[in-house]
Amino acid sequence: MPFTASAKSDAHILFNDQRPSPQDLTEESVVGFVSALCFRPIGDGEMVMRLAGEDGGHIDLRTNPVCAGRLAIALLDLINQNGWFDVDLRVTEGGSEIARIKPLASKTFVCEA
Image 1 (cartoon, helix red, strand yellow):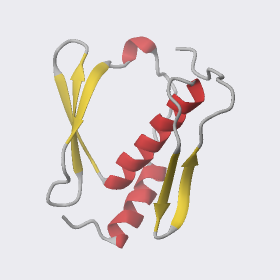
Image 2 (tube, rainbow, N blue to C red):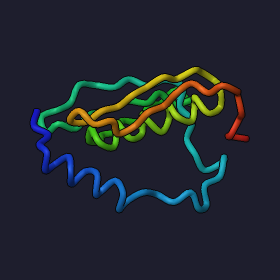
Image 3 (spheres, rainbow, N blue to C red):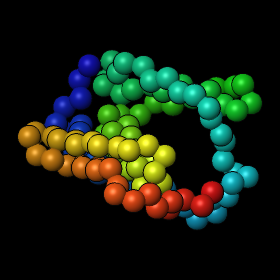
């Protein structure tokens, strides 16, 4: 399952260049899901996730390890900030720390949805 250093670099650039805007995002415009399953990387190093929707259906998504990792970090950070769980996570790449999430001393809800 190849995911070369060049592919990783390209994925970071694509992630930053294609970052979506929250403009026009409303509660009515999103699809809710209640469960998820991630599958091993497929032949080109990308991963597949199946999300089970609130309506009983499912959505299959495919992404690269960079996008998956950055999404996981963002979700865990938001969960930690809201105090829903205490998250203690260190992410390294090539021996260098690239992300660190520490449990918060006080619980401050940052999401009002």
